[in-house]
Image (cartoon, rainbow, N blue to C red; front, side, top):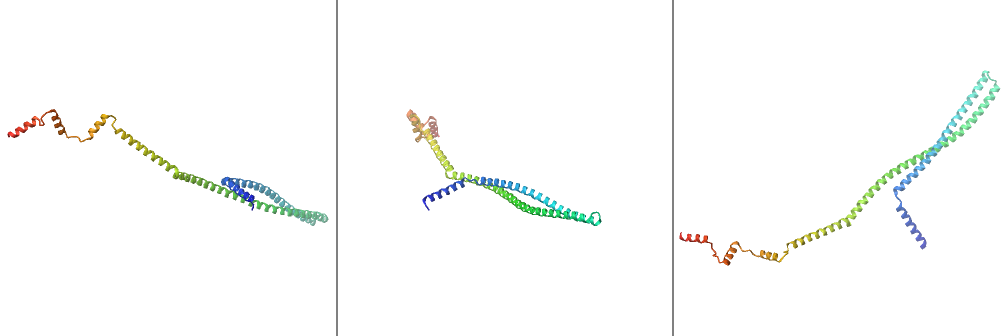
Length: 250
């Protein structure tokens, strides 16, 4: 195989694949149903025309058969009238012979129309089978089309859901949660930072007071004695001294 033939084959295969992708099965089925309906209309028209011919041929067949029977009856009547003396035998024979001749022509015409009627009957039967087949095919295709549309809706909905789920699992939700987590951690760190800044003293006096407050605080009695020493006051109060003297007297 030459290189040009191989290139042509590859191009042809790709073209067929592209056409297959462009074909919508629902639209193809709908077009097929429309084509079948056109064929059905043509078949019904042909059936109506052939049936009309069949009816006309059947009526003509009946008419020729009836005419043949009437000519035979006339020939019999002519011979009976000649036998009864109402008509001369020679005249009766002549007329009866003519009646039988016309009966023969009528029978030939009847036989011809009978063959035509049979052909029409066969054509009508064939066309009726064609019409029935087309109707059955249309019904089948319409049912398949409804099923195909339902399956298409389900498959499209399923594909959309799966696509959304796949997108959520792979990127959307995970990324969103990660960004949210980072944002929360950033806000928490920022709040803690502002808290530490708020606890820092803003002036030197505040720093001094905080340093003093942070040391061990003496008890209230110790602070009182320390203050009395600085002021040169006795450590015990007069009430406490009087109480002590009274106790010694007792």
